[in-house]
Image 1 (tube, rainbow, N blue to C red):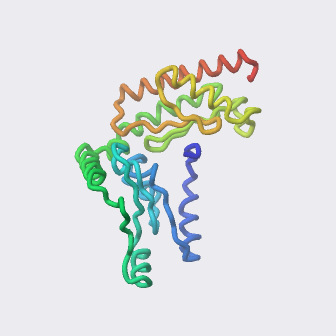
Image 2 (cartoon, rainbow, N blue to C red):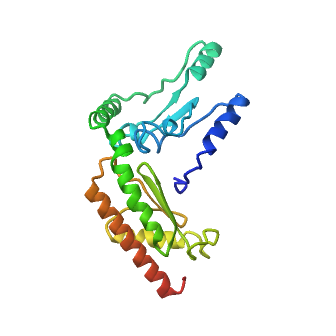
Image 3 (cartoon, rainbow, N blue to C red):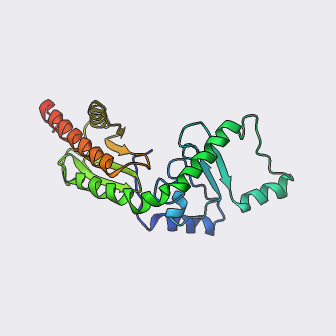
Length: 230
């Protein structure tokens, strides 16, 4: 949500070590990275983490019905039980039967159709390769993707990612609007364009996605040239 900032391989192991040394609880937000997005059931699996708390939400039902929650480790649950006598976590609208049924059905489909494995072994690598090729565009400073979550940083000067556009976010907004006009949803976070396509994306749809993205970049670049931003 902050621009698909993919950490270097050394980042999470060091965070995990520091928290463990100081006995600090590790909270891993799985609202976006959970349920197959990175080619693993959870982002914590992808990075080899062992969090104490994991907020979860839309992936649980694929967004068909609203449902969210927090998964807790034995360490946290036992602490609450030891101090409070019972782990109170039931509220008026908790475990709504319709939402719970949608979640169970969704999880069953993900398992039956092997969507997590598909992201890891098939459509993920396929789209990543095509998406990375967009990095050669004169407007793109970097094109990055993990699993089925990607971003493109738009820059005013190719090869210089430190330099930003004078009015931060304006070029991202322009690119987003052009993308919408071309029939594809790309979200602008500042001057980065991010995508999070469905796990059932086909190869043909992936090709179409990249074609539209490149067309959008070309039209954004041309408009920036016309108005004198570049």
